[in-house]
Amino acid sequence: MTAEVLEIQSFIAQYAPFDQLPEQVLIDVAKSVEISYHRTDSMIVNFNDRITELYMIRSGVVELYRRKGELYNRLDQGQLFGQMGLLTNNKVRFPAKAVKDTLVYCIPESVFNDLCENYDDFADFVEAEDTTRLKQAVKGKTEDANALTTSKVKTLLTREPVILSCNSTIQAVAQIMTEENISAVLINDPDIEDQQDSSFVGIITEHDLCAKVIAAGVNVDSPISQVMSTELISLEHNAYIFEAMLLMLRNKIDHLPILKNKIPIGLIEVADIIRYESQNSLLFVSSIFQQKSCEDLVLLSSQLKNCFVRMVNEDANSHMVGRAMSEIGRNFKQRLLELAEDKFGRHRFHIVF
Image (tube, rainbow, N blue to C red):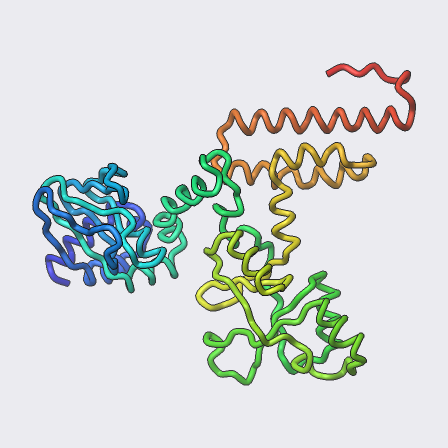
């Protein structure tokens, strides 16, 4: 390893998101880097230019601008720019100008994409700014953002997918679905040597069993390959929940395989998205008063943990979480007393809040 590569590796290892990468990966990144020099007041990239590199400031100061010329951000040593263009349509979104004489490390797009694909922490870091922008675009201000546009689809996964052979009988597949209490399984072909390139070849759902087997009178001893769906639609684990929702609506499907490095790591249903959205604390409060019995309230209370975990994940501060906990607890108590009044009569209770 040359002294120059060693110096680059040592520098990038000091700054996020590279500080979380393995040493050998850092060496490979350092070897790919090209160094560019920009004089004071010179443009590094212009609006709408094609962008094929991630930029890291080695020394100097860089200012980013909006398309109409307003200052957007000022960056210095160790900071990145250009990631937004690489993540969208390879067009520069924010022109960059060297405010002082500046040295920049240029990391090729192919290396950037590999890091995003293989290292979740890296992907989460470079996507963070886009997430904030997306929040503001959808709701006008960050605190009102719809979590479907800011939360990753991997947060919906609760278990690994069940994958069965295409040679399995319809009856065997149905039995496993019943035993595992699941509504869909993925189907693979054991005769395909490279499972990495074709980890599954079909999907079968409860709806398929009803429409293609029971309604059509197909023999349950037939192989599942006879009735499985082969028009495969899937989504990467780092996509946003709203992307999953749009994909499922557009293709009129109820189940969506979620992949990581082309390998399925789970399945989500439309019901998972609905359940996730129902964990919103405001919706949770309103649902308390819709419960008709103590048993219903007990069942609802089991979802309370998810509600608070979601608030924390969405950066709610301690004051917000405390107020939500207080309000939810107060409304549980109120609904319990209302149910008690309905059963025993108001004269039996002295209600104090």
